[in-house]
Image (cartoon, rainbow, N blue to C red; front, side, top):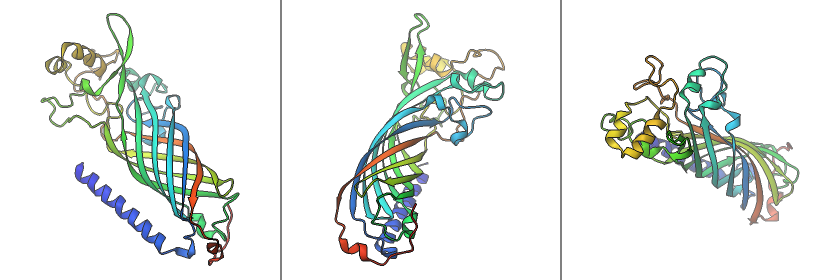
Length: 326
């Protein structure tokens, strides 16, 4: 895993270097940028992982997305525009994700196994990323610096880091009172236990790869608004604290305090079919699928305001390309 992450980071750094090199080559004299933009983002954040889902077997990306679990996310960004076709964005975002097997769209098929599993989670997500924005239609515009009224599609890709800390809903068996408890300290899948040497304690801070598309509309030179969908590829399957198989609950009482063990015992397996032979919800049975890492995405409206410019009027008289307004 470490080698693959290092390789990925090297590829991202190389890609960013190539983009900057292309900028300095000033293709078609479109380097009439040199300004900064700041702004805010708001929009829904959705989770894609083991918990919850839609009809059929669990699938990646939006096929298995539960709309009722969507919550709002908020962010701020500063973007340097060394050229009209290029933006280099530093973004900070905060939101919440959750998943709940009880909200799985049940139609009597494979998805009923998830409903019977009966697990749920929630987690705050705080992230920071550095990304490149590319505006390809700029190369077909006659006057790229004349932006008022323009509509520009763009692509975005970068590298970042995010922090999460999953919680599950615990019901006290003696009082019936419900409360949210942090799941990582409970070792719900035996992470860190000697009996499972391949199940390491997962880190709550991870790398992600944001990638997406958007479209930007310029009210005038100083104010614009964008709508973008950005997917985050991650390298962990534990955002929801679910990844592999159920463990023997007696191990909780071996490694944890009595109070923690009681909670971990319940939180690791909340299925009403637990204990029934052959039900599929006993030690060694599948709890999650580790062949697909968790992911999350945002669909945000982004307001941008120009912070400053070093643009010279002479840039407007540079060599122009064929015009195409969007």
